[in-house]
Amino acid sequence: MQRIVLLLLLLLTGSLCSMACQADAPSCATDTTLLQASTSTSAQVAGSSGEHLSLYDAYPYYDPRFEAPPSPDMYLLTGNTVEVIATCDNYAYVRYQGSKLISAGWVEKARLHATGAPHARPSDTVAQVCAAAANIINRDGSGFSNLPYLPLAATPDGMQDKISQAANGDDGNIDGLARIKIDGHAMKVFPIEDGGSCPSDYLQIWPDDLSGLVTRTTADNTFADGQRLVQVLGHPLVLQVEYGSGNEGTFSLESLSKDGQRNTLCTATQIYTPRPRDLSGSANPICHAVVANQTTAIPVQAAANKTALLPKEEIGTFELSGTSQADLRNEGKPLDVGLMRFHYDSGGGCGSTDDATFPVILNAHGVADLTDNANKQLIKAITGVSQLNGATLTSPSGGRLITYAGHIYFVTYAEPLNDGNTSNKGLTGVVELTPTGSQHVCSFQPYQFKVEPTPGLAKQIMSW
Image (cartoon, rainbow, N blue to C red; front, side, top):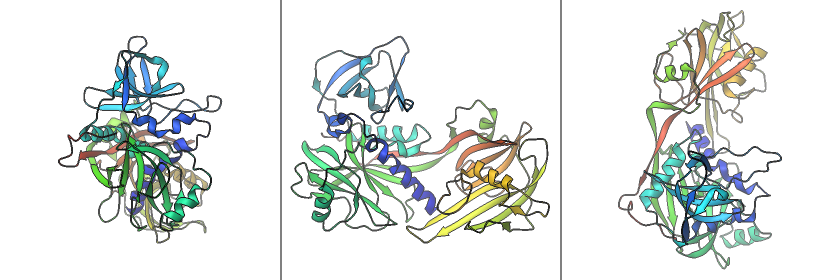
């Protein structure tokens, strides 16, 4: 579980480089104060009837010589009315008031037709910001990794030493900077990573002229610190990750005052849903059948030999949890197979616990030989890696073999699963194995995040 929580933290922070690494992006794309303009201009989306206009959370810079256009986060339609907050190169940052919630992001400005003069930008309430955050993190399979970071500009030469020395001797790595406004005051925010192999992430808040540190978002570098600067509807917020001590799967969004005080606006809790959402878009009926528990589990017997043959360089603990006979690779040839479980505890760095379950082919002696090429291919098909160890494991923790319409499938879960358990909790996907490889047929999101305003703050107006 601990490793899964740390992986969630990585997902939260995984978008950090999405803008900072785009060296050729227009300079205005890294000017984060653009998103906080106090005025806007009404406009209408132009185009043919029903035509889509792609909307992106982050500025959609890409080099058409080497890259395909990024996938949009949502669409607007011809005739939709938006508020144009800012423009940058060929794109405009807009605010769209839908029937249920507000969305914001970058669209092609050539598709917009102004319908009025600049005016005071519509205000947002805390409840609207929390609803927008819930929409971002729940709408696709990326989960809360889609909560977008403010683009970070390059750190000027010599600034890291100046800030590090001023901030009580901090010696962490400065990832970049963001220019924001807090209550109308221009400020600079520096994301810091500190703590060696088990780092803490926190923020330093400075006035725009760097005359003196205002605050840092944590008082020490203890384990389980995780603060990042994000934006929702153009509002810069501190994302506070909570993990450990029973707080797995939660986070909060906090506002900043000009003197560095933080105020929790929204709290998010991860909740498993009774019916996982199919994100794959697959028309294969197996996807519906798995969610509806309309498949047949392949019987698994207790394994007489609970050991496995391992190459010397692989670490961890493997156990053959059960055996069966199945046409594992859907080639018309039943095989002696087993379910292999992997468990690894590491005390290094922050510490981690890794679990994986995957099918293997047993040899003539009933032993799961993980040095065999066929089993290596099976391991890679399920887990994505050819060697299982604490450093590279990214596989599903649980799984079971099923049959449906004459085909064998392996169903994956985010948590270890007892044999015969048909619960949908943690259901993540369906894999079909073939003689030549594998196909991930379905991808499921087994949870949603419930994002709620802090009691008493729902109607509070967000300031610029």
